[in-house]
Length: 137
Image 1 (cartoon, rainbow, N blue to C red):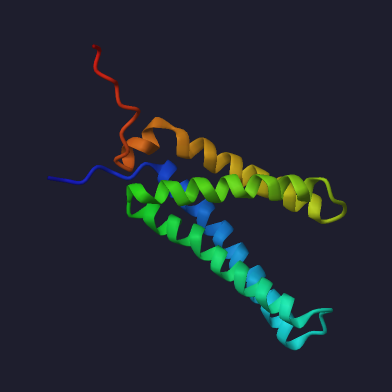
Image 2 (image 1 turned 180 degrees about the vertical axis):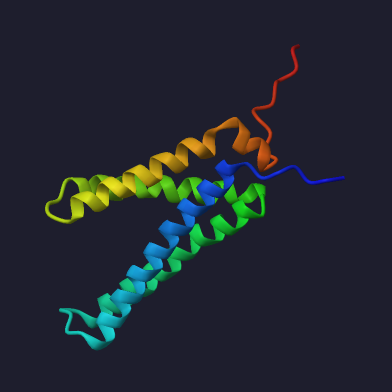
Protein backbone atom coordinates (compact mmCIF):
# COMPACT_ATOMS: atom_id res chain seq x y z
CA UNK A 1 0.00 0.00 0.00
CA UNK A 2 1.48 3.34 -1.05
CA UNK A 3 1.81 6.01 1.58
CA UNK A 4 -0.24 9.13 0.80
CA UNK A 5 1.73 12.11 -0.38
CA UNK A 6 2.79 14.70 2.15
CA UNK A 7 0.84 17.96 1.76
CA UNK A 8 2.92 21.03 0.96
CA UNK A 9 1.46 22.61 4.10
CA UNK A 10 3.35 20.11 6.25
CA UNK A 11 6.63 21.01 4.55
CA UNK A 12 5.82 24.72 4.94
CA UNK A 13 5.10 24.43 8.66
CA UNK A 14 8.16 22.24 9.17
CA UNK A 15 10.31 24.80 7.36
CA UNK A 16 8.92 27.66 9.46
CA UNK A 17 9.60 25.73 12.67
CA UNK A 18 13.10 24.86 11.50
CA UNK A 19 13.71 28.53 10.67
CA UNK A 20 12.65 29.61 14.15
CA UNK A 21 14.64 26.85 15.82
CA UNK A 22 17.76 27.72 13.85
CA UNK A 23 17.34 31.42 14.67
CA UNK A 24 17.03 30.63 18.39
CA UNK A 25 20.03 28.30 18.35
CA UNK A 26 22.18 30.78 16.40
CA UNK A 27 21.19 33.56 18.78
CA UNK A 28 22.13 31.30 21.67
CA UNK A 29 25.51 30.47 20.14
CA UNK A 30 26.15 34.19 19.63
CA UNK A 31 25.25 34.98 23.25
CA UNK A 32 27.37 32.10 24.51
CA UNK A 33 30.41 33.15 22.46
CA UNK A 34 30.04 36.79 23.49
CA UNK A 35 29.70 35.68 27.12
CA UNK A 36 32.92 33.70 26.85
CA UNK A 37 34.99 35.99 24.62
CA UNK A 38 33.35 39.39 24.84
CA UNK A 39 32.99 41.80 27.70
CA UNK A 40 29.37 41.54 28.83
CA UNK A 41 28.22 43.15 32.06
CA UNK A 42 27.52 39.68 33.42
CA UNK A 43 29.39 36.83 31.69
CA UNK A 44 27.49 34.20 33.67
CA UNK A 45 24.15 35.65 32.63
CA UNK A 46 25.20 35.85 28.96
CA UNK A 47 26.45 32.25 29.02
CA UNK A 48 23.31 30.93 30.72
CA UNK A 49 21.10 32.94 28.35
CA UNK A 50 22.99 31.50 25.40
CA UNK A 51 22.63 27.93 26.64
CA UNK A 52 18.93 28.51 27.30
CA UNK A 53 18.35 29.79 23.77
CA UNK A 54 20.22 26.83 22.29
CA UNK A 55 18.06 24.38 24.25
CA UNK A 56 14.87 26.29 23.37
CA UNK A 57 15.90 26.16 19.72
CA UNK A 58 15.85 22.38 19.87
CA UNK A 59 12.07 22.33 20.48
CA UNK A 60 11.01 23.76 17.10
CA UNK A 61 13.80 21.82 15.36
CA UNK A 62 12.48 18.54 16.80
CA UNK A 63 8.93 19.60 15.91
CA UNK A 64 10.03 20.31 12.34
CA UNK A 65 11.58 16.87 12.04
CA UNK A 66 8.45 15.27 13.48
CA UNK A 67 6.26 17.19 11.06
CA UNK A 68 8.34 16.05 8.10
CA UNK A 69 8.03 12.46 9.33
CA UNK A 70 4.28 13.05 9.83
CA UNK A 71 4.29 12.27 13.54
CA UNK A 72 1.12 13.41 15.30
CA UNK A 73 3.01 14.40 18.48
CA UNK A 74 4.90 17.10 16.56
CA UNK A 75 1.87 19.35 16.24
CA UNK A 76 1.89 20.16 19.98
CA UNK A 77 5.46 21.50 20.18
CA UNK A 78 4.94 23.33 16.87
CA UNK A 79 1.81 25.04 18.24
CA UNK A 80 3.53 25.95 21.50
CA UNK A 81 6.48 27.42 19.61
CA UNK A 82 4.20 29.64 17.54
CA UNK A 83 2.15 30.75 20.53
CA UNK A 84 5.34 31.66 22.39
CA UNK A 85 6.59 33.59 19.36
CA UNK A 86 3.59 35.95 19.29
CA UNK A 87 4.40 37.89 22.50
CA UNK A 88 8.04 38.10 21.41
CA UNK A 89 6.92 39.52 18.06
CA UNK A 90 4.67 42.01 19.85
CA UNK A 91 7.56 43.16 22.04
CA UNK A 92 9.80 43.58 18.98
CA UNK A 93 7.08 45.55 17.18
CA UNK A 94 6.79 47.96 20.10
CA UNK A 95 10.54 48.64 20.14
CA UNK A 96 12.47 50.82 17.71
CA UNK A 97 15.02 50.57 14.93
CA UNK A 98 15.96 47.28 13.32
CA UNK A 99 13.90 45.28 15.81
CA UNK A 100 10.61 46.34 14.18
CA UNK A 101 11.25 44.46 10.90
CA UNK A 102 12.34 41.44 12.96
CA UNK A 103 9.02 41.64 14.80
CA UNK A 104 7.12 41.80 11.52
CA UNK A 105 8.92 38.72 10.19
CA UNK A 106 8.42 36.79 13.42
CA UNK A 107 4.72 37.68 13.56
CA UNK A 108 4.24 36.68 9.92
CA UNK A 109 6.04 33.36 10.44
CA UNK A 110 4.13 32.54 13.64
CA UNK A 111 0.71 33.45 12.23
CA UNK A 112 1.33 31.57 8.99
CA UNK A 113 2.42 28.47 10.88
CA UNK A 114 -0.56 28.68 13.26
CA UNK A 115 -3.04 28.95 10.40
CA UNK A 116 -1.48 25.96 8.66
CA UNK A 117 -1.36 23.88 11.85
CA UNK A 118 -5.09 24.37 12.42
CA UNK A 119 -6.14 23.49 8.88
CA UNK A 120 -8.08 20.21 8.64
CA UNK A 121 -5.83 18.88 5.87
CA UNK A 122 -2.80 19.27 8.15
CA UNK A 123 -4.52 17.46 11.00
CA UNK A 124 -5.53 14.65 8.66
CA UNK A 125 -2.02 14.36 7.23
CA UNK A 126 -0.65 14.00 10.75
CA UNK A 127 -3.30 11.42 11.67
CA UNK A 128 -5.00 13.65 14.23
CA UNK A 129 -8.71 13.05 14.55
CA UNK A 130 -11.12 15.90 15.09
CA UNK A 131 -13.27 16.34 18.18
CA UNK A 132 -15.11 13.21 19.08
CA UNK A 133 -18.86 13.25 18.85
CA UNK A 134 -20.50 12.31 22.10
CA UNK A 135 -23.13 9.60 21.83
CA UNK A 136 -26.64 10.87 22.25
CA UNK A 137 -28.38 9.61 25.34
